[in-house]
Length: 285
Image (tube, rainbow, N blue to C red; front, side, top):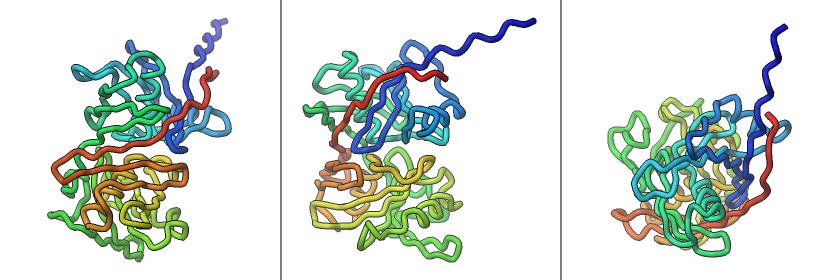
């Protein structure tokens, strides 16, 4: 009789969140194997796994001078190019691990290199790069030139929105009342439209004051989350370009507040916000 295969070793992890957007963080430095889609789905399951919006993997740096790199996996098992709240949590994890000092450093993501500043008390500022409004680079099909407002007819519903890439594609819909926004209907409808070949995160933004907006985001591969860092950056960038808000704003999400600053169109946009360690453990897969 063949011997039964030995059970897989428990998977060590850290559970973290940034403004309520929660993550399972895995240390894969030194060549650890990346989790496959099935493992990600099981790990992210809030009933039989650890439970999270996304899985973050800490890996060896990909560029000179970076402390580490990281990748992002959505709860449905798909990969993501960018995650602002995740970037802050990775920064906090690296400081706690001792790989980064409590000052300025840089991390690599699939979207590029991100300079990081530790602000104290678990807060970090991340350089998110320059917003990309070129439809071909978002990508957004069917529009040869950039527009401040795009209009799509999706399943007989006319939707007006702004579009931008923050390393991942975003649609931004300005609304009068974010609490009444049709997040669960328009979100997946626009997200799955053929005009967004890589899908999109769909944000619903309400301008409260020139220096403050409220935001809800329907994330691709996840659904609505308590916070979306790149979504906050995208909403602020679109509204700044329209002249609707100032160049530095507070973004209030269901899970907490982020601060976005974008001095001018030629500069990088930065995001500041909190991080928190929830617990550490081992998962018997």
